[in-house]
Image 1: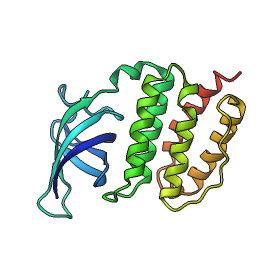
Image 2: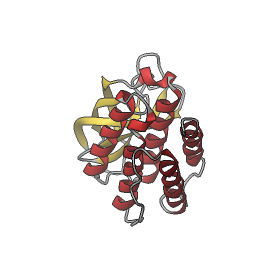
Image 3: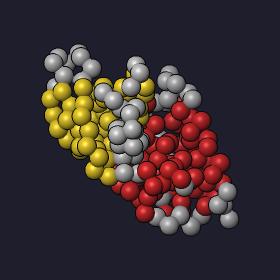
Length: 201
């Protein structure tokens, strides 16, 4: 494996004293786990924020080997980490993507949708501007993984119905793609739900 492509940082896990293993979502190669030397250092830590867009150079000697990656920051989501709702939304959708998708299977529609969703979270004046796209992304992910979930699209002005749809889709996510995975990822969604409820009305 050897490629260079734009990627979304979806998750990072500490590895050894200074390195991290990052899960990067690319349009052409899907979700790719890669070893990042010095990823916990002062220079790379801000680059590896979930939601960031990076230029990734990924290489490995064999298909079975964990690839090494070098990253260059293209777009940072760092400024939104101090905003509770955007930070919770980005944390949730990137964590969901990292844990639900199989590695090295391309999902170009999901890559495009996630890129647009994170951009909407960052530019919309309030959660009312991105709540429906977030639900649409979750439904798309379920469908791309083979789970046909009948969920009607609520009216954008009906916040109560949007929250009800959020709860219905959450049950489907917990039941299907996350059923046999680490369930603690749903705690991130619960936090987002609590913050969304505060703007009801």
